[in-house]
Length: 191
Length: 424
Image (cartoon, rainbow over all chains, first blue to last red; front, side, top):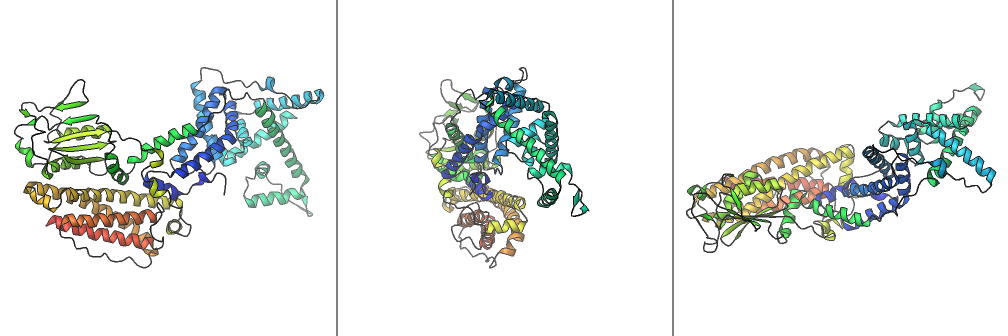
């Protein structure tokens, strides 16, 4: 059984709960356990994604926690979620945009990755080369269009094309096209 | 490119990344794989793509992963929030469905919080009741203003221009005849169909009580009761049941998920898919609930006005009582007919053996017929829940279609019998 079996709860289960107006305690416990597991596995990824959207760290962290509470609440209503990770990023994306809109008066959070980035290599020459290469790639990423960058980041979070399309409100084929162009451009710019 | 001595077209460049990402159909994927195996150019292109994907993954891990600012605080433990969400759901579904409302109400009535609003109509009722209040169904009236007593949680109703007497303690006990106008008023408001409103006698008073009733309905009920003597209205908010004592929890905790071979799954495939199944189930449940609300209403009238009590009513009130019951039966007939129309074409082909004809019930009066009607309605409700996979069947799950159609036929027969008694 999939570790996320609770997300694929049968419609019969949902009906049963709806009819009685209650959800068995063992089911809520299992649901809590699974959402907690997913929270522990994916919260850092969601937080990172929200930072790339321009949220400040405290808001990104708060929004991340909110996403998982919404997930629990949605499951608690008896709704079926086929792809929990896709669902999480879709909600995180929408919530992140709302938070960003509220903080419109402020500049988006500057990740300042160039300053923060440290190569893993202990060898100074190698460290320098690695750092240069990574920064060049970073600039190439910054040169992508917003949609290309979103598609790329979401793909890097493990989402499939239809899931990315659902997050961004575009078709899976449009996702494929954005990704193809992004990869082509990164290749050219990082060479 | 040359392949086996014959030129072969390169796959479209657009397909290479989706191919790597596993986003192509199996046929497309096979074609690309076969081509790449023999085409250096496309294989090199794929290698380049892989390399850039590798760069992206490194960037994601090292730059976005390690260079990102960490969360400013430790991650919160969500379990407390889960409990809060659970508590909100524990309160919410209590009145989610009419059937659940009625079944939940009996237990909840005992746990009413201290009355938040009490209308003491009986305390200051007219010395001589207005003649129309004796035998006519009560109409909602907003003409008589209510006056709040400062410093108390009660409101005192006074009827301008009419002498009042404190009669609650000296008046004779309220009887069924006093309840009927209150019930008729609730009926006019449609508040006797699943809303958690109860009518009961307490000494010389008729108490109309409710918990979790909407503010608007409370207001309308209060207005409607203004002109009815002996009536006290009490509303309160329901106390949330503890999470492990949710209404219905014990009924459903042991219910096992539907077996793929059972009727729900079979029906789903018969209907052509999950969406059709959901629509079918939803319609049946809606009409079943509407039907059950009517059955409960008739049953309640029968219980509150047994044959002897009805015999003590004057003829006007007897007529009123029967007209209330018949209205419910007429509405019930519509719901049952719709249920039959929806269910029969789908269930008859899979009902084996054929549904049984209704058995004859020997009721002596409409109250007894209402009891039979109540039992057959509960039977159809139970079987429908099992049929739709909404509860574990009490009996083996086979023949659910046949049992539901049989129960529906019995319900129709009992309904007709009850109506016959009410008419004559």
